[in-house]
Structures are given as C-alpha cells and as structure tokens.
Image: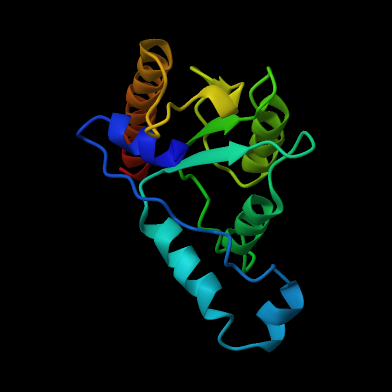
Length: 174
C-alpha cells in the first residue's frame, strides 16, 4: 500500500514499478556454482533491477533490521561476484514501523549494506514513518495533508537525486 502511494506521489518524470521479492529462492552460493542456469526467479529479478535507473527501497522494520526477503534480494542481486546489479544504482529508503521511530533501525541497517554494494543512497531528506498503522485512512489513502506533502517532497528529492547521480556518471564516462 505504501509503495503504491509513493508511486502516485512521484513526479511525472519518474516511472516506478513494484518489484516483488517475497518469491525469490533464498540465495545460496552453492546453487550459483553448480546449477546452470541459476533459478529463473534470480535471473528475472536481476534483469528487473539491472534495467532500472534507480531503486526506491520501501521497508518495514523487523527487530531493528530489514525483513529477510529484502536481505535475500540484496544478496541475489549482488551475485555472481563482479556482476552486481546494485553497483552505482541510485537509491533512497522509506522505512516504517508501528512504533514511534519509524523503522530507523531498518533504514540504517539497510544503508550499511548499500554502502558495501556501492549504491549511492540519498542522504536527505530521510523518511522514517512511525505509527505506520495510522498512516492510511479507511479507503487506503494517506491520512492527512502533512504526510502527503512530506512524501511528495521526498519523491521530488529522490527524482533530483537520481538525475544528479546519472549526470555525474555520464560526465565520468565522457
């Protein structure tokens, strides 16, 4: 629900889609080495991320970290070694939790992994959405103008971030 609301708030210059990750077989390096080709779900997922200009991570917080499915998706996309689909892919993070701190632990734990994966991640503005159980009204829409404006501004900043990174990379490439 949150991901779809973020898509609707994105500037018209952006085209976003939800990439499902819950169905991915758990990454196992042994499978990569002995099964040719690797599981089709891995190949399809890697292809989706590879062609994307950027990634917006939308995650709940579980025990001060990201859900296992998201960690698995990071692992699947980072292999085989030397062919990570995450490399230089601009990103931003929106985290949420029913508690007051809005997924702060998940957000920062994910940032640690993204540094290792060489993912330039937007630093500001940050999006920690606390009391996630109260974010939406009975019709599934964001409850209140404040959160709507906050997330709309976040999405505009993300669009600007993606363009900044892409422009920089084009200059470097010559």
